[in-house]
Amino acid sequence: MVRRNLGPTTRSVYICLACLSLALHLILAFFCLAVLQTACVLPNSYSASISPRTDTREENPVPSYPHKLSINSENDKYHKLNATRLPEAIGAEKKLICAKKVVKNASRLEALFHHPLYNLPEPELLEDDWLLRVKTNEPTDDEGDDKEGISSDSQWQSGSHEKGYDKVSWTSKAETHPPWLRFHLGITRWELYNRKDPTVAKLTHYLANQHILGAVQKSGGTQLKLLLSFPNYGQALLKPMKQSRDAETDVNLFYFSDFERHNAEISAFHLDRLLGFNRIPPVAGRLINITREIREITTDRKLSRTFFTSPAGNVCFYGQCEYYCSSEHPLCGQPDSLEVSLAAMLPDLSLAPRRSWRSPWRRSYSRTKLAQWEKDSAYCDTVKQTPPYNHGTRLVDVIDMAILDFLMSNMDRHHYETFEKFGNDTFLLHLDNGRAFGRHSQDELSILAPLQQCCRIRRSTLLRLRLLSGPDFRLSKVMRESLSQDLLEAVAPLLSEPHLHALDRRLAAVLRVVKICQEQHDEVIFNDLGGYEED
Image (tube, rainbow, N blue to C red; front, side):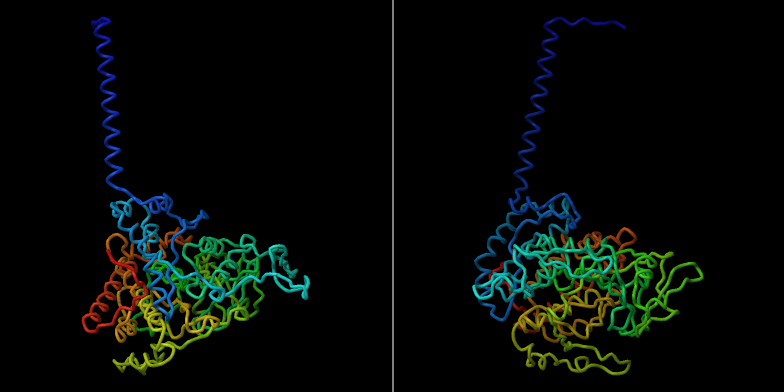
């Protein structure tokens, strides 16, 4: 091999060429970077809000955005408010030159919740708009220091000395309160919780992980439910797993004889949140140990007598209730692990009384009879003349609930509740959703009777439905991502793929009904958005 000796001049030329090549590459790289930055300009509020994480249970503070719009019978006041604040949100939306790329690269769920339709302004909350308030101790000259209440300088200390309960000291400061108490104190006239409040994520984490101190049967209802107690005085409603994820309800079974499913309760909470309603208490899935977390700690003698070991060696129980509480329908672990849903409890009725309303579109719950609305196509005309449906937002509230029920195929909506403090000018509570998601192969159009017969729908609801029907935020995709945050998703998907696809199919059916209504009637849209303009 011949070695070639390079002279000083040749070596200098090679070094110069190498430096020139490096300089050209650097110039080209800076040029490409500048082109990419100018091709996709994001407003500061949007780019700062999208983070790489997809798990919304983290306790990082959520960026502040305009609050969700609240509606009452005085629509003009809110329309003026929207006309002044909404252009800012709309302007931010129009600046998203590369919105589709953002949705693909970031979390679809986070991008959806940063959309202007999920960040609508609302009126400032007045003192009477809060369900519960912490009492403040502001003694007058006559009262001295003995006035009942909690001030920033005083503490509430537990007087209970029961074994297992925490010795707690709560002040008026929110950071001293457990998640369940923060949830109660956050309920307002307009919504059960604010989606941007980190308390919701903390509460679902709390439900899925908190040590269980007690378990007893919950009275009322037709199927077995347990009331769990936690050391910090919180409680949760437990519904156990009764059938596999992919099992469909028997077509020969009446709706009032169907199982209540734990994954239906979890999925209903997520769907309600995706629709922007925020009317279902937070629900979380959990894998519990039947022996250690129910049998050994229960003080309910009726419940304790129903435990047994199956021939397969699994721990089982069945409790006492109207339906499916027998040794022929046991709830069995593997060998003692059981999937359950845990729902946050609402404030005690002694503190926040609730009123139960019979739904105008309640089914007959008979094997032979039909309800009046099933026989009279003009039934809604009568409803519109009946209080409280003859004014305010109560009628469109019921239609919102019907759309939710249709999407998840829930035929068991016989009553709904409201908080008495707020009268008729408030939201509806969407409680007890265990019989939802029973069939994915069939769409029960009769659930949409309120929409079909009244031909009325909130504008905000309609715009969100259209948004969720598009390719960027398809309902099945954001629902899949939302459910992935639940701990039980690690065991198996909470909703099977056929159920997720059914959501898209049913959403399209809702939009078709609205289109037919618009072709046949003039006043279909209840405008609760005022100055909001669609792009």
